[in-house]
Image (cartoon, rainbow, N blue to C red; front, side, top):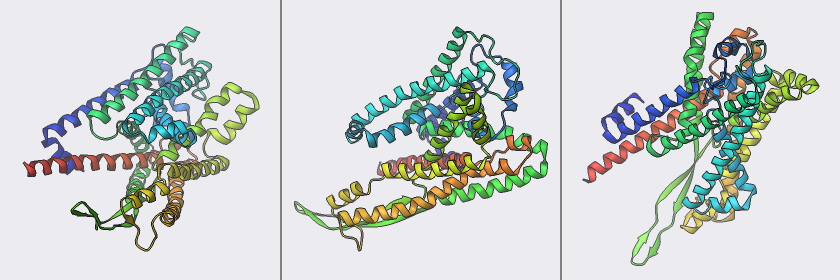
Length: 429
C-alpha cells in the first residue's frame, strides 16, 4: 500500500486528487470536533464517558465520537448512507424508481436527488431525537449536568438546524471527494470516522492493562487478515462467447468469468441493522414507563441474548434481500444470451438464470454467517468482559474492521487502476 501511495504522489494529477481528498478529510474532522452552538462543552466532556454498552459504543464508533458530543457534524454520514439503502430497497417496490434506475445517467441523477431529499428528512428526525434526549438529560445515562446552555424552543431549533446543515455539508463533501478526489466519498468519510477514534481507544487500553493491549493487537491482526481473506474470496463462473460474423469480421470466441464474491452485500446489512435497532433506544426515553424499562433491559446494553439473536437474524435477512436486489440472475442471463455468451455445460436462458441463482444463494449463506459473526464479536466481548472500562475501550469490533479493510482495499484498487491507465497512456504516446 505504501508503494502504491508513493507512486501515486509522483504523478501530478493523482497527487492533486490525493491532497484534495486529504484536505476535505481534515475539514470533516474539524466539523466533528466543533461543538454546536448552545452546547455546554465542559458538561459533555465530563458525561460522555458515562454511556456504556454495545449500542452506544457502536454508534459512537460509527460517528467518529461526534454524536454523543453534539458537534456540528454529529450525524456524520449515517443519514446519507441510510437514505441510499432505503432508496435501493424502494427501487424494488416502486416501479417508477425501477424505471429511473434503468434509464442510465439521467435516471441515476434523479435518484440521487431523491436520496438527498430523504437524507435531509432523516437528518431532521435524527437530530431532533438526539437534541430532545440531550434536553431531557437522557442522552448520556448517569449524567446529571445539563448538556444545553439554553433548552428553550429557539435554542433547540438552532442546534437541530446546525446538525441538519452539518449533515448536508457532509453529503456535499462526500460528493466532492467522489467527483474530484480518490475513491467513493461517503466510504472515505466513514473510514475516517472509524479510524479517528482508534488512537484514543488503544491509549486507554494500554493505560488499563498493557498485557491486554498486546493481546488485543495480536488478535486484531489475525482478525484483519481473516477479513481480507474473506473479502477477496469469490466464485468465478466461467463464461464462453461463441463466434459471430458481423459484416466481414468475426467477433467473439473469447472466454471470461463472472466474479461472485462471498460477501456480496458488503457492510450494508450491518449498517442498516445497527441503525434500525438503534431507533428503539432513541425513542424509548421519550415514551417512558414500561417501554423504556423493556428497551433498557433487552436492547440498550447490546449484550442480552435476545438482542444478539435479533441482530443476527436481521443481518442475515438484509444480506439475502440486498443481494437479491443488486444481482439479478435473470437479467445477467439475458445479457449473456444477447451477446452470444453461455456457461459451459448450462443451456442459455432460464437454465443459466436458475444456475446463477443457485450459486448466489449458496454464496450468500456463508456471507451472512460471516457478517453475523463479525457483528457479534464486540457484543460477545462486552458480555464476557464484565469490566465497564474495558467494555467501553474495546476497539476491534467486526463492523469497524470490515469498514476499514473494505474501504482501504477499494481505495487502493482505484489508485492502482488510475496508475495503470496513465502508464498505458504514456506507452501509447
